[in-house]
Image (cartoon, rainbow, N blue to C red):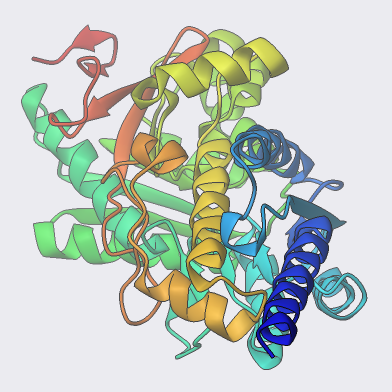
Amino acid sequence: MARKMVFALALAAGLGAMVAGAEAQQPVKIGVPLPLSGPNAQFGINIRNGLELALSDINAAGGIKSLGGAKVELVYADVPAPNAAGAAAQRLLSQDQVVGLIGSFVSSITLAVSEVSERAGVPMITHSFADQITERGYKYIFQVSPKASRFGKDQFGYAVAIGKKAGVDVKKVAILYEDTAYGTAQAKGLREAAKAAGIEIIVDEGYPLGITDVAPLVNKIRATNPDIVFPVSYFHDALLILRTMRQQQIDVPAVGGAAGYIIAEFEKGLGPYADGVFSIAPANYDAAPEINARYKAKYGSFIPHEALMYPAALEHLVRAIDLAGSRDPEAIRDAVAKLRYCEGFAKALPGGCTAFDAKGLTSVATPVLVQWRGDGLDTVYPDAAAKAKPRWKGKTVD
């Protein structure tokens, strides 16, 4: 009898080891729907670069330890526009059987993808800004960045505060924004902040994504001469608006709305016209010198904000999977919601952690203001996060 019991225990242990071994051999797949082609491809490429850095760290450290050391595998899907989002998300969920999603940068794409992931009950973590993302009452979507209206509010408040330090009594401003989910939500935050401050908005103009003629917008800036202009746009529109302004010698301080204003390609596209341009940002590389050095050595430029934010999202998701000890999306979702993660890429973000409130919105992140200096960006506001003093029309502000 004793020998039979020993044999049974040994058999159970062996079967357990076999199951653990099989579990470890099967990678944990995470879907990454991104714009890897089309007008926003550069953002998708930057995100993929950052994710691959984080992925190498995760797998080198032993993968998902609670799942027998299973490696993490990222499954990318190119989603250049919102109308391609649903089908791409469905393929990731049904064909690739991913246990979670990271993406998709462009808010309108994220909104479409998250419709599918919500119905499927699969968690998704995004860095997209649009307010609607976490205002729909969804259970499975999480934002590592503040929402767009918060960015607009701080974009306005930070800029006005610096202007006042420079001796400028800001009385009138201009808002230019693309009419997407991201642009309209951030413009709303700008408007609300202007109203609260009693500052007149003399230009408030939306325009279609991918605009080819910005002359009417720039002519309004010239005619009204605002104290500050706040353009909210992705990359190509950002280049066109700023280039046209500077070519016409309009030197109104410009404070961009993140996105197209804070990637290396912005300075490469504008050259000296980029110098001095401000932008709100969810994070900046000068808070992460070691990570930035690794990224620059591999990819040849500083690490842009999106390549910091999405790896932080990935590490949060991976840690949640490890804590759940399961591939079940429901268990993973609950772990994502409860987790406060303050290691790795998260330490480089304002707030130093990734964590979420009951709606899935970040409970710790705050925007910063950055400014172009030559071919790099310096964090200049608020003072607690600043790495350099801001400049207003070329003069340093103390």
